[in-house]
Image 1: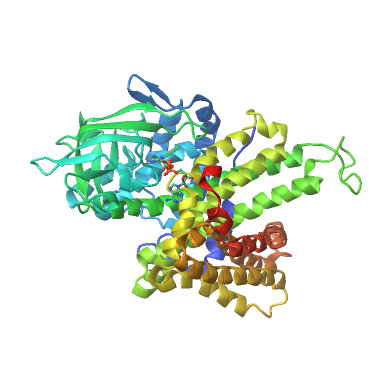
Image 2: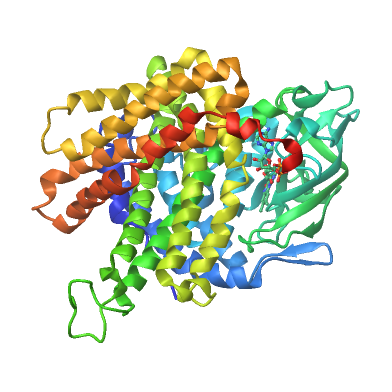
Length: 594
Ligand SMILES: Cc1cc2nc3c(=O)[nH]c(=O)nc-3n(C[C@H](O)[C@H](O)[C@H](O)COP(=O)(O)OP(=O)(O)OC[C@H]3O[C@@H](n4cnc5c(N)ncnc54)[C@H](O)[C@@H]3O)c2cc1C
C-alpha cells in the first residue's frame, strides 16, 4: 500500500531559494508571511494531508459518492475530514480578511493546494470549487452579495460550484440554453439543466452556492448573451442562514473513471431564484475570473498526482527485489537486487522526478507572479506580472495535467503487475489524473488559447515576459563553464521555441488551421523550455552546496537537472520538426475516410 509524505523540503527550496529574487514578503499585506510562518503553514498542511486526507483517498475511491432519494452522500469519513479542514481555516487561506480569510500569498496557498491534490484529489474538489465561487463573487458581486455569501464560503460552512456545462454544450458555451427571466424584485427565475457539475450536491456543507451561466430574455445569441447568476441551494433567511429550499435539484450523479469521491451532478433548475452577478451579458468575463484561477488549480492537480505517484514508485523500487544489476550483483547479501538498479526503472523514476519537480518550480514561478500582479505597488511591474500569468496559465494547465497522467502511468509501470491491480493504489492515480486533461477547458483548447489568444495579444506583449528573462539568463551565463551542461541545451531548445513562434505566428495569419494543427506540440515545446530554464536555475542554486550540509538533496537536484537536459529536453527537437512540418497532412485528410 502506497503512502504520502508532504515534500516540504523541496517546497522550501523552491519558495525560499528559487523565488528568492521575487521578495514576496515585501508585497503589501504579505509582510507577516515570514519564512518561519510559511514553514509552519507547510508543516501543518503536510500533517493534515498525510494523516486526515490521504487515509480517505482509497476508501473514498472504493465507496464513491451515492445518490439516494434525491440526496448525494459523500463517502464515509469525508464529512468529519471536511469539518476538521474548515475548522483549521484551510477553506479561506487566500481569502480577504474582511470576510474572515487569512490573506495568504498564492505562492503559499498553491503549495498547500499541491499537498491536498496529492493526498486526496476528490476531497480537494469541494473546497477548490468553493474558492472559485468566492473569487468570482468577490470580484464581480454587489456589496450585499459579498456580505451575504462570502463569509460562509470562507469559513467553509457553505460551498460553491461553477455551472457551465449543459448536455449539448461543453467547450462551446455560446450554445448555453439555460434561461433567466427577471422578477419584479430584481431577482431572476433560472430554468435549465446543467450536467457534470462538480460538488453540485453533497452532504459536507449547510448550503451550496451555484454560479450559473444563463441567458436573459432577449439576450444576443452566442457567447455575447450570457450572464452569470448566483443561485443558492437554500435561500438565505433573515438571519443569513440557509433558509427555504430553492428550485434547484440534483437528479443524479455520474459513474466515472476516477475522482469517484467527488460528486459530479446533473442539476435541474426549475424557476430557481437567482441573482445577477456582474453586468448583464458579461457572464463570460465574470466566469473567467474563476476560470483562470481554476486552470492554475487544475494544473496543480496534475502536479499533486505526479508527486504521489513518484513517491509510491520510488519507495516500491527500493524494496522490490528482482534480477541482478547488469554489471554484477549490487546488493549481494539479498536474494536479488532491488529493481532500482535496472536502467529502465531508473529512467522511469528520473523521468517522473524531473517532471514533478520541474512542475513544482513552474507552479511556484507563476504563483509568485500572480502575487506580484495583484499586490505590487508599481503599476507597470504588476501589469507585466499579469501578462506573464496570462501567458503561462494554459501552459500550466495543459502541460502539468498531461504530465500528471504520464507520471502516474509510469508509476504503474514501475510497480509492474502490482501497479495494475487495485491493492496498491497506483492505478487510482491514473484514473484520477485523467479528468484533469479534460475539465476547465480541454488541453486542446488550452493550446488554442496559447497560440490564438496569448501569443498575438497586444502584438506579442505577453511573450516578452517569458522570452526576455530566459534570453537574459542565457546571455548572462553563456561563459559559465560549470553551468554549461545546463545552459547549452537550454539555449538550443529556446532557439527552437523562438523560431517556432515566428513561423507559427506567420502561418497562422494566412491560415488559422496551420497554427491550430500544431498548437498542442507548440504548447509542449513552450512548457519544456520553461522547465529547462527552471532546471538550469535550480542547478545553479544547488551546485555550490553539493559538498556541504544537506549535500544529498543538492546533489540530487543537480543530477536531476542533468537528466532533464540529457534525456527529456531533446524532445524539443522532435516537437520543433513536427511544428515545422505544419498542418497540411492533418487538414487535407478526407473527412469521409475517418
Ligand atoms: C468529472 C467531471 C467534472 C466536471 N466538472 C464541471 C463543473 O464543475 N462545471 C462545469 O460546468 N463543467 C464541468 N465539467 C465539464 C467539463 O468542463 C467538460 O467536459 C469539458 O469542458 C469538455 O466539454 P465536453 O465534455 O462537452 O466535450 P466537447 O466540447 O464536446 O469536446 C470534445 C472534444 O472536441 C474538442 N473540441 C471541442 N471544441 C473544440 C474547438 N473549438 N477546437 C478544438 N477542439 C475542440 C475537445 O478538445 C475534445 O477533445 C466536468 C466534467 C467532468 C467529466
